Length: 294
Ligand code: CDP
Figure 1 (spheres, helix red, strand yellow):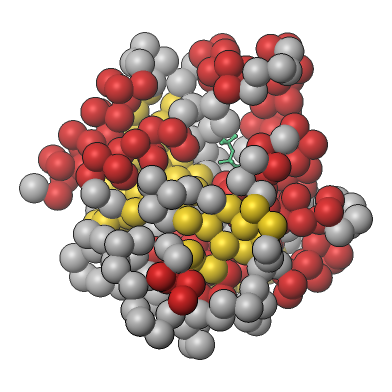
Figure 2 (cartoon, protein in one colour; figure 1 turned 90 degrees about the horizontal axis):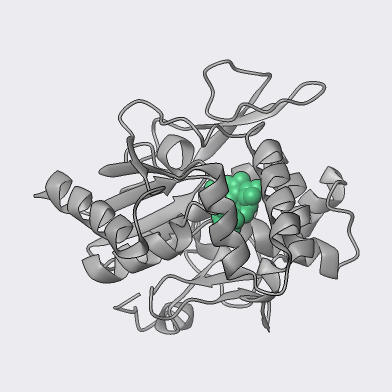
């Protein structure tokens, strides 16, 4: 974040906190407000819903509220980027944001931080009711300046801890809980609305479809599975390529039951980075943004 409001210490630190929506606009004590507007819950499976939760029993399916615009400022450029694990979307999104002079929001970090918090609190990530109960004390904060990225839960910096394999293994169970998604979608929108740069690059699994379907630029970043696995195991040195590959494939399988992030929704541009290097992928994103916003 570049500009701060004098009354808002969290903003001065470049923080976006869970407490950002709705009023009071910010809490800095790490407490979390009641679930907020921005997405509503529909009971039952909806064939054309963005969340295609394949599970037993009735499902609470978050769908975007058409009344709710994610672009609080009329001229705010939102760049929505979705893609599977290992597609490079985090590093590409961050570098693109830097080049464009935009903020950057990593939404996966919130799901990972909640998974970390569950493990740290001795809560079974598969126990949905207990996980939902954690939201109230989930003092989550993320840096949206691409040059000052951090993730905190309360006073603990979890930027590295949330990348540990034990957290990756737990995160899909957390991410399939409808109340969690409802809560976090509203949080993500509040962070978008708080942007004080000309734009924000937001990346995840359901940004183009649910979090910011009205974004000016919507991208699906893909790469062949083998390439994605090789990239991810290079990132996680010290772990065998085979183990990383297995975990990534398993997470993709679980995640794809909740959100379709492998096929571009209508109006979404696919960038396939299989044969592109990092700089070429960033250039493809930046050029598309410039083209669309010229
Ligand atoms: O970078 P990578 O693709 O490995 O994952 P991530 O973006 O850090 O996201 C971690 C997990 O959060 C995913 O495996 C999903 O379970 C969940 N997630 C989600 O459900 N929706 C999002 N918008 C972002 C992440």
